[in-house]
Image (cartoon, rainbow, N blue to C red; front, top):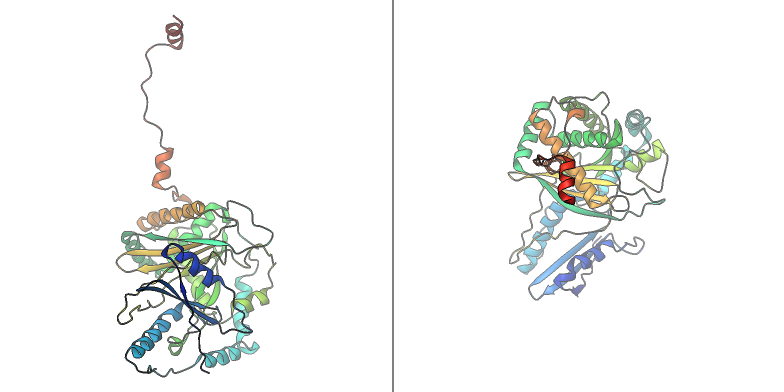
Length: 390
């Protein structure tokens, strides 16, 4: 069915652009009356505009960005030439995927996967202790903030080499590092971390715009103070098992496991690590200079969410998203600083036990270093006193 999408145009100033974009992004969809896509064109000046596209999560995911931009470029190029866009036929439609998923979720097919998750997550801690600045409110507000971070090309190269030596991926090495840091900061030795997986298990789905992503719970045991190399092996084994049982939707998993519920925090995990390996969208439109504009939604889906990806030749890029009800930015920055410190150390010596890694940053070492010794006077205290009262 063809649907016309309204495109209102609104004048804004550059100074309030971020707030205007955030306001549009945060406006709630009324799915009973709206399609799950909203568009708005913000006009900053005669030759500068911002196109805001907002998707409800049932309609799109991160992977969808590349095919969406490709289709937008195809349509724009054709319309510029006064022609109708010519679409390449897709091998399947999203409706085909939903029918397949309905079949998969039938009890005979999904039960073996559910059995795996029941065993893998048996006795999972209700929540882990994180170094928060404030206690959780009785009911989560989902207010959050975010900021960008990065690691240099030298550390990235070391992570690549370490991953290769361990028969793992860079994501698994970073995951092991985060797990070790959380353990050292008081989370305990049973550490569940959520991660997203593309869910596009067939190449025919790669060019579709839709919601395919699923959330997995990767539970890692850091007990016994393992070497970092051994911890990477634990993460690798648990990750590969989880990938082999990825068809159970997270909502179905929560329903099946029925963990203790709280309005204060996310079920099954409170920390997420998402690896950003989606295809990079080609932001090319004829006659236009196009750039992606960051959007601040003011929300966070969990207490800590780290989006991390490789930037070939330039290191690791990432975004930290955090629950601002319980964390200050400085505390999240400190966690990331300790993660970077740990990864730098284990790249140099992966057989170091995780409990032996010095997590203090260079700046913290400088602050703790004793002040240079000051020469003491030759006189005794009594002589100095007598000199003062003379």
